[in-house]
Amino acid sequence: MENLSNGDFWRAIMGESDSDEGGFEGFSLDEINKKDESDIDLDVVVNDEQLLREFESSDSDRDSDNHGDSGDSDMILPVLAAPNPRRKKKRLSKQNRNELTTRWSDRTTPVQPKKFDVGVTPVGPQHDLPPDAAEYDYFSLLIPEPFWEDIATQTNLYAAQKQAQKGADKNWTPTTGSEMKLFIFIQYMFGIHRMPDTAMYWSSDPLLRVPAIADVMSRNRFQKLSQYFHLNDNSKAVPKGQPGHDALFKVRPLLDMVTNNCRAHYNPGRDISIDEAMIKFNGRLTFKQYIKGKPNPWGIKVWCAADPRNGYMLEFDIYQGRATVPIPNGLGHHVVMTLASRFLNAGHHIFFDNYFSSVRLGQDLEKAGTSMCSTIRLNRQGWPKELSSAVAKKMKPGDIHFRQDGNMVATLWKDKRPVAVLSTNAQSAMGKHERRAPGGRKEVSVPEPVLVYNGSMGGVDLADQYHSYYPVGRPSVRWWRYICWWLMQTAMVNAFVIWKETHRPARSKKGLRHLDFRLQVLRALCKGNVSRKRAAAQAIAQAGVIDSSPLTHKIVRLPGRKKNCKMCEKKKVRTPRGHGVETVFGCVICDLHLCKGECFAEFHQHLAQSIH
Image (cartoon, rainbow, N blue to C red):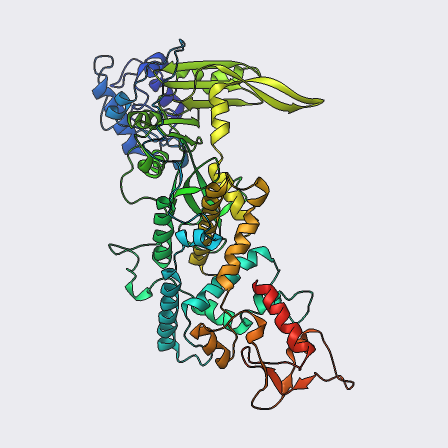
C-alpha cells in the first residue's frame, strides 16, 4: 500500500479497502462520527504529507482500543487538493471544550438575570455645571480649554521642524490657541455648508462664498494652518517594528483625552450595545479594513460601546490590525470583554451581533454578573445540535425552537429567514409586535429574545447617524486626520447628549435639536477671534483684543497706495472703464480697503451676522 490512488486512499479511510492485507486498517464513517470533532475535521482540505502522517498517528494513539496499527510509517500518501486556509476552522483545546459543556433542554424555566441597581451607579450625565451653563460649557467637558494651546504648540513645533528640513517658510507665522479655535471652527462649519471644493468657501462669487467662513480667516492663512496642523511631537515617535511603537501616535493626545472625558461625564443605563463603526478612508494604510454592507465599506474600523437610548459613545477602540498577543477565545470575545470591562458585575445587559457572539462569551459574561443578548451563527461551538443549520432549512415561517441551560436561552425562529438568538436576559416565550403590512399594521408573534435584541441593539448605529448629519473636515491624504475629525465629531455628539439629558425635563422636545446645539457651540468658538492674513490684523487677533461688534471697527486712511475695495469686488462693481473701484480708506482692525459709507457698513454688518 505504498502508492495509493486517491480513490484507494479514501476507501481505506472509510473502511472499504479491497484487500485486508497490508499494515493499514481503515475505520468506518460511524466510527468517525463518534470521534471528538476537534480531532478530525473533515471540512479541512489537507495537502501536506507530514500533516497526513500526524493526522493518522494521532488517531491511532487516541483510539488504540478501537483501531489496530496504523501501518508502515514510511508509506507515501498522495496530495489530495490545494489548500484553502480560509476554510480552516479554529479549534478549541480539549480543556476549553470541557468548559463549554452545556446541558441544553427543551424544558423552559423563568430566566432570572442579575438586577441592575441604579442606586449603586447613578445613571446619566455626571458634571457640576450650573443650570444656566451655555452649550459651549458642555462641549468644554470633552474638549477642555488647555487643548487649544496644546495643539497650537504642537503646530508651531511641527512647522519649525519642517522648516529646519526644507528651509524657512516666509508665509508662516506662529499660531495661537485662539486662532486654532477658528481653525477647528471652520472644520466644523464644512459639515454645515457643504461645497464640492474647499476654495469655493472663499470664492469671490456671492453664490458660492460663505461669509461665516471667509470673513473670519483668509484662505491663505487657513491653508497654511492646515499644512502644519499637528497633535503630537514626531520626534518622540517610536519607529515601526521597535518595542513601544504606537500606530496611533499622531492622534494619541486627542484620543486619550476624548476617551477619558467620555468615560468621566456620563454613566449608561442598564442596556449597552457593542458594534463596529467605520471611519471612511480610501487611501493606503496597513490597518485599513473592508466591511461589506457598511455605508462606508472601506476605512478604519472602530470597536464601539454606546448607550442605545441616546447614542452616547461610552467606549471606543480603534482597530490597529492583527493582535500581537494571544487571544485564546477569539477576537469577538476579546473585544466585548474589553469594551464591557468597566461595566461588569453591575447587572448591565450587553447587546452585540453574531460577529462577536459565542456560547463561551455568554457564559463568561454571566459569571461576571452581566447579562447578554445577541444573534449567533449556527456553527458556533456549544450551540445546541438540535438547532443546527439542517434544522433551520426545514423550518417554515413562524416555526420556533427553544433550548435552555440555566439562564441561557437558545432561540431559533423562522421569520422571512432563520433567526438565531443567544440570550441570558430574555424569557423563552413569545411576545407581540406590530408590523406594517398591506392594508395597515398587524400584530404578529415574535420570540421574546428577538424583541429584546431589536429594542436595545442600535446604540452605535444611532451615534453613526448623528455623525453623518454634519461631517467634520475635508478629504486629505493624511490618514490620521480622519481619526482626528472622528474624535472631534464624537466629542460634539456626546456633548449634545449630555446637554440634552441634563435639560430634558425643563425643555420641550422641539428645543433639543442637534443643529441648534452645534450652532451655539460654534458661535462660542468663533466669538472674539477673527484672523486675517495681514500682519497687523494677525497681531491684533493674537493679542485677543478684537471685539466682533462693528462699532470698534473704524474707517481710516490706510498707509501705502490705494487698492480695490473688498465689498466692490464682492459685488462685482466696476468703474465706467471696467476697472475695479480703488480707495485709500479702509478698516484699521480688519486691515482691508473699503469705500467710505455703504461699503464699510455693509461689510461689517455681514461680519457681525456671521459671528453672532
